[in-house]
Length: 441
Ligand code: 5AD
Ligand code: SF4
Image 1 (tube, rainbow, N blue to C red):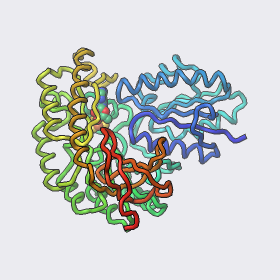
Image 2 (tube, rainbow, N blue to C red; image 1 turned 30 degrees about the vertical axis):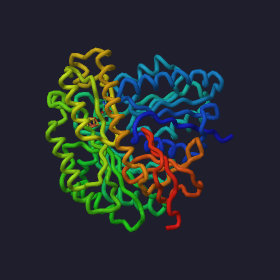
Image 3 (cartoon, rainbow, N blue to C red; image 1 turned 45 degrees about the vertical axis):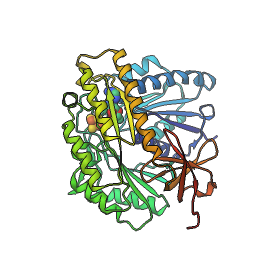
Image 4 (cartoon, protein in one colour; image 1 turned 90 degrees about the vertical axis):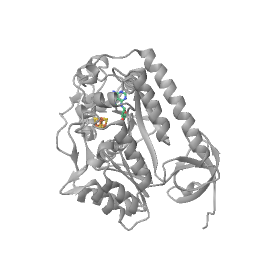
């Protein structure tokens, strides 16, 4: 009988796309995707370890799987990705959750289909186990089969890993050094997606601005792809402020297909903290960059990641972060409480108290929410071109404007994958509501 599988994704956008590759490795071998744990013969968790909260949540979820395993004794449980890639993680997972059948890291996550096959075809399914998180290296597995689940959005990795070593961040340890994919491979993948009717391409990488391969830099890659003769939008994630060059900004300005929307993690607003974080820029540098972006790209929407409670952050340092947030007025900010990650430099610094962290995050969130509310109000009665992505639980269509804002509105499901003009009539903190305008125009 055909076996079914479920891949659950924890963490970032990069992981959403990696789960598409993991699903591809299973579908390619004839396994069938399902939506619920109770229907699955194989459950794969694609994990994240960037913050303590992410990891705790995954541990809780792995614990829950024990019950499913009791109900279905041949259930295969696979834990793959960032969390299993950490030093010592295999031993911890094995001892806490002996029912796990497969553990793979980031570099070899795509092998999950093969390993599942071996277990299913083995004589004693419950004895065969695979635990291996190979060191992240410079190899890029290029012949992955991808089961795309995000139509009309096509995710394309342009690089893997990171060379930055921000002192709080575990990514370089679990994903290894930066490695860029060959431009031709990126072009081919993008062109195939566009031929298949995908309408939004998002280039993915930890630090896309430092893309470099075969003499191509990120500006050249963006410029070349933006000239492909299809109707589509081009986005990219994530930018490091230090590497966002004038050349890149000029390419964004002159290409209509490149979205005027940049995610530019600031992390902190004080020079002291930025230096301890090893971010390689100052508060003034960041603020001047924002000014330059707004000059060159007047309609550009800026979003950010920002953290409170980094070791040694004083009240004064924190106020500088609040002040920066109030000055820049980001359209959206992902706000985090710093949590120490084993092996990172900052985890060995003197930590600040949980109560102080809690007070600071509460204040930061409330300041940012006010800003978002004000920005949302300015959208009222405006019309945006929305790429329709799907139907939500309330039966409304949802999609994004070029600026990245989520917009919901009533309409026919066959509009998924279309560009539609929507006039905003409701403002909420995380999304806008509207109605279709000039449908036939
Ligand atoms: N603690 C809290 N937040 C973190 N981030 C990265 N590492 C940590 C950590 N140890 C945040 C950063 C990054 C985002 C993806 O996660 O803000 O930009
Ligand atoms: Fe982590 Fe810094 Fe690299 Fe981003 S740029 S992945 S925060 S080390």
